[in-house]
View 1 (cartoon, rainbow, N blue to C red):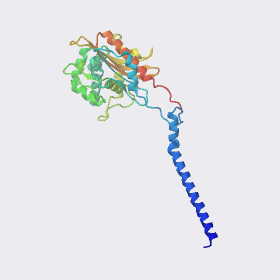
View 2 (cartoon, helix red, strand yellow):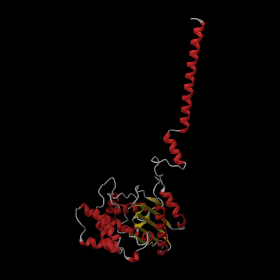
View 3 (cartoon, helix red, strand yellow):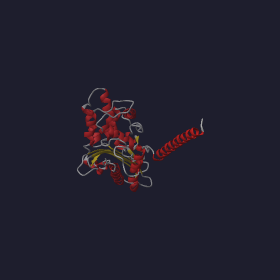
View 4 (cartoon, rainbow, N blue to C red):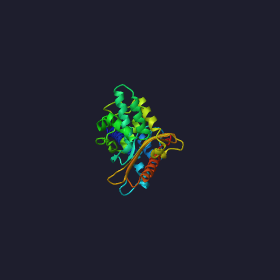
Length: 319
């Protein structure tokens, strides 16, 4: 091949080689840029996390409601022998997450167990496809409205004592409650979280039961319990009811017991109250109180703090 043609071919080969190198370099630069910036979605997500949300891409951040509740309770936490556990649920919230403080702490129920006894009685009646008898209704109303202990004794025997209570609790999804020994139903052990689970089984509008047994309280049974705990004797209107908005409706059951071994008081309150249009289920359990009145004061302050913490998330997410 003549030298002129050789030089021409060489020039063309050199230009082609140079173009391939440039293209490869540009591709590498583009890949490096993508690696640094991320995908367009990731870039938008980072921008949103930095404080400029990308519309339609970001969901509301998960809130650690347990930590928020603990912060709200910190100023009122008792010292010495006094113990406190609290759980709260915004019944009108979408996620149905129970916030709790002292989640695993066990407490004597005292008379708050009477709601659980009534729930067990109603479940047994449902299984037998019958309504409560007139005598059962009389005892149930006395047990709940005036916290009558003799009526409670009758129903405790009727449900089969601790064994019947434990069966009902398993059915309703309570996992940390154990019936008291013999006739000492007031020494049933429970947690604040379990008590909110029981309240949810009573107040939820949809079906609530454990996975093992899909059949929980019927609508009629729920309405019956709700009606009774909304008509508590006036001298027992304390605890959870103190945390509601003025004029709002409430439903509760309180428990109080002075332990003979220490002379200190168990003071508990569980129930539902409404604040700014939202329904809250609250349980406050305490022990080691120096007096009944000091225990009531502690329980009421804790209930207010719990609802304050739970209601802090009730804000529309920016669109």
